[in-house]
Length: 362
Image 1 (cartoon, rainbow, N blue to C red):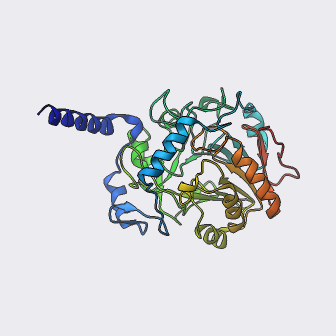
Image 2 (image 1 turned 60 degrees about the vertical axis):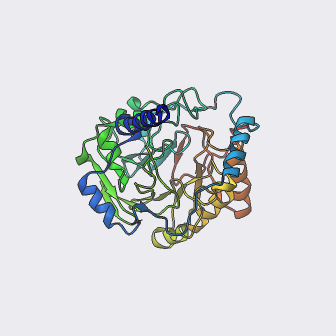
Image 3 (image 1 turned 180 degrees about the vertical axis):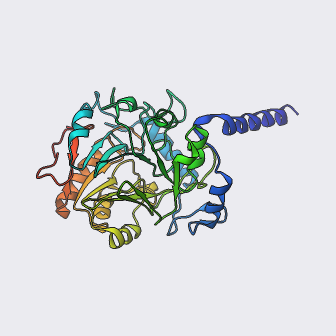
């Protein structure tokens, strides 16, 4: 009887946390639910990838990963704080060129044809639903805090994992961003966090949204979603940003697959690609690329130059923190690809004669 009571109490606690703890997110509205059910990507109660994508590890795999995590990985974090360039809001606003500024991991500030976009904003110190628990940011500070940024035309979200969709950051962005453009199902999280539903736009793969002369296109990725127990209840996307002068591709999180060539054939070539290059493991090969695959993906989408992202801020895998950029640099040389390696906060001007390429991580 006591064991049964304990089980009931534990189940009740889990239920209450999932239902009422805000960072875990919220549910889709009735209108959004109808669109989800009608999506070609949704079947048998879940969103699906374009190709079979297994993500289940055996008990042995899980145990081995746990042992490696406990033992630790050499050079898994920087010995000191990584260098950060402070954000110059005046220069950002006055410069008429298209620009991108990397804030570490997958957070990016862009200005394209004067339109200001923020991608996957994570400004918290931890990539976790619980403060002071989980992967901690390498740098002691960011190039700027949300309050220091100019007014944003839109925030783009790739998927709802904690290192891409951050509760505290969205709460702070409610008064800073005019619109939030997200994959199908993600609006439920934002609405629960106080974002006006009229300012949220949900897109399925290949759907477009016009924004002050830009075309924003939700494109496929090979990944998964899940927040607060809702595995694959929301869609994951990559994004294409098109102006009259510039074409940009952002990969979000993705394993390697034929969707890259499909995107390149339909929407390429791209002046700049922002492609996931870190937080990989051979056991996660279906959902996260190795650096060599990331460079191949850049070729598939027909990218002219590439900034490696999804590294430089948090340790989420068992490789050293510099392994992604070091392997990507070698792969870029073999493929004759222009790899741009800015410091966190350093401005990259699209179409410039020169690009940041120092080995700052050394």
